[in-house]
Amino acid sequence: MTNTHLSLFQQHRAHCFGLAYRMLGSKTEAEDILQETYERWHGQSLNSIENAQAFLTTIVSRLCIDQLRKHQQRRHYIGSWLPEPLYDNELSQAGPFETQSTYQSLSLAFLLLLEQLNPSERAVFLLRETFDYSYQEISDIINKAPDNCRQLCRRAKLRLKENTEYQAINDTINDTNNIQQQQLLSSFLACFGQQDLAQFQKILTDDISLISDGGGKVQSVLRPLYGKERIIRFFKAIKKRGITQHLNINIVLVNGKTSVLITSNNNERSLFTLECDHNKIQRVLIIRNPDKLPRHFNQPNRQP
Image (cartoon, rainbow, N blue to C red; front, side, top):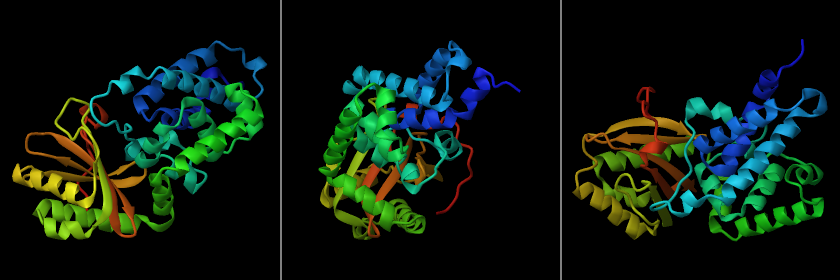
């Protein structure tokens, strides 16, 4: 039976979406890229294509590079920007996950870190380090010489390693298992719900940071907060305003990490994702932009 354009595209859809999502940090934009990719793919004669995945990867990579170069809307974004999350039932769209590093490259913290790379560096780094393409293959995909691709990857690695968060993410991958993550999340929820700030301080690192993304559509912290004292003051302000009362709490899997979706009595929602280091919380990522949160969440409440 002859493969049609659609059936072949569906075979490689997860690979293409996974690449586009990691490149752009947005599932909405990734879906748009896949739509345009399919339109270009459908216009090609299958007889002229030797390797469907390589052909599709080339289209996706180049479209993503172009999209990143004209990301004017992100430059004018109000407040801090965080990647659009993938929820439990969406995670398989960005697979398969042959290795732990492929899986961990979906974490919100890692995607946020990639924002400091230019479009070509980001493409080469992901194709090489996450998807294990050779430099010759990458050269064909982005239309640059192999030596140039090797230099771009080296430069991307150096730039990432200069950021202390990069090592912290690697340490988290190696040292913090899912059980520890869930235990810290349980402690966080207990302190948050009971408004026990004294106990809360004990589970925070001294250099903790907090980033909140409201997209200018709901109230949120416009700039990142750094240090335990500032984070404590932030949660004290929440406590003073009575926001921690009458909350609906759902434990969710977001980009492979156990997170918590909190809905207040005025129906405002906040998605909390914790980055941990040696049994303490090192970073808190809060997504409040309603465009990045599920409209209808039908998972039952669960305890970590």
